[in-house]
Image (cartoon, rainbow, N blue to C red; front, side, top):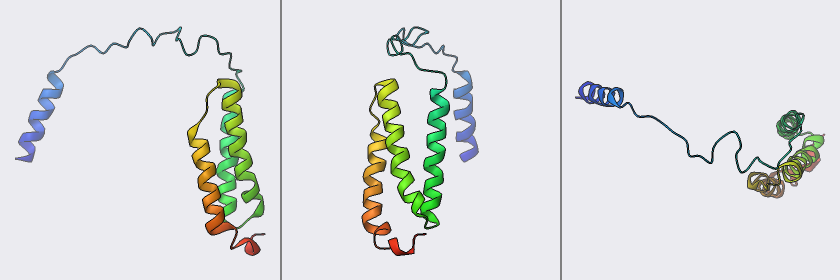
Length: 116
């Protein structure tokens, strides 16, 4: 029964030959990108800040104080870069900072004496 159902679904999917078109808003001259001048090095900088954030999480895992300090600095810098260059506010950065505060209250502050 499963083979029959799979075969029927496969044939139906293969028989569909639709043309996918994007709305006219999505083109080379998008409305959202029209007046934004993003430097070429911006994406490399964002990637580097994300790597620093991930390394600071590893530092927190291994009880390093530099990881505890560097993580919120990296997230705030990431938030600032998006706000400054793209004029967008990232809720994921804010959520990460609020989660970090909760993690700090529940896990980091009670064990601060064990951090090197």
